[in-house]
Length: 215
Image 1: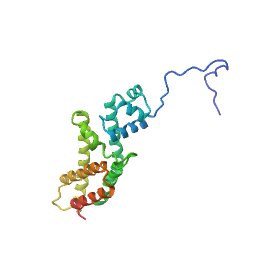
Image 2: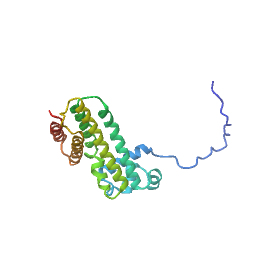
Image 3: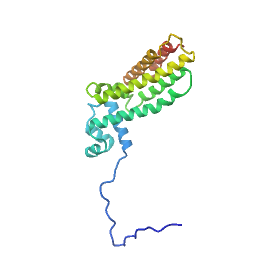
C-alpha cells in the first residue's frame, strides 16, 4: 500500500523552493584518481594547480574545498596509490604457495602497475616522485619509509616461511633476502619508467629469483 506524503503538495501556481548551495558536480574518488595519475606521471613540482584543475574538471576553489592545498592533495594521492597497491599485493603475500611462485606473482603484479599509463609507463609513485619529496617533507618521508618497511617485512615473512618448509637452505637469512627482493622491486620500477621492455624486466626478475631462491 502506498503511503501518502506527510507534506502537502505545492499549489500549481506556487514555485518550487530553491535548493541552497551548488550541487557537487564531481565524484571525489574519481577526481582523486585523476590527480593521482597526474602526480604519478609528472611529479609534485611539475604539476600545477591549473593542470590539476583540468585533469579533475574542478576549479581551484573546488579543489581546495575538497582536498586542501596542492601538498594535501599530493599526500592523499600517494595514500590512494599505496592503498591500491596493497589491495593487489595482499592476497599474493597471504596465499599458500611455493616461494618462487609467490615471488613470480608479486613481480608480475608490480610490472602490471609500473607499466600502466595511457601516455606510457608510469613506474612507481614511491620511487619516481615521493622519494624526491621525502627529502624536504617529513610527512612524506614517513610515508615512504613506512611503505619500504612494509615491503621488507612482507618479503621477510615469505622467506622465513620458505626456510621453515625447507625451500631455502638453513644458512639463508630472510631479512637479507627481503632487502634484495625489495631492491628488485625498485629497479624494475625505475627501468619500467625508462620504457625498458617488459620482456627485459622479466629477465631481470628471473635472474634475481635464480640467485635468491634457486632455479
